[in-house]
Image 1 (cartoon, helix red, strand yellow):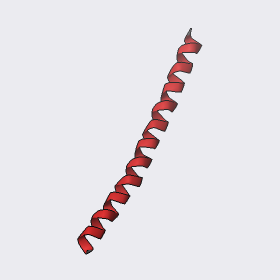
Image 2 (tube, one colour):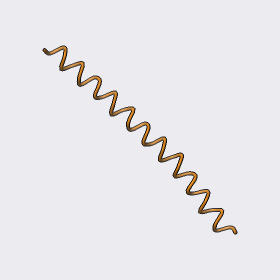
Image 3 (tube, one colour):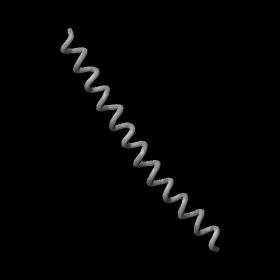
Image 4 (cartoon, helix red, strand yellow):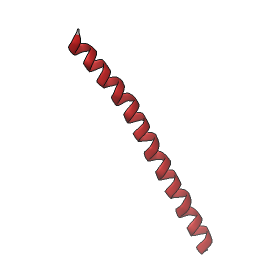
Length: 44
């Protein structure tokens, strides 16, 4: 029982870790694109 619980917590930790990584990656990618679009609009 303890081993099963530990495994679940371990998997949950990895899931949260990768979810955060994905969110940060998407935010940086799209945030950067939005920033470039704003800059282009300001210039033109």
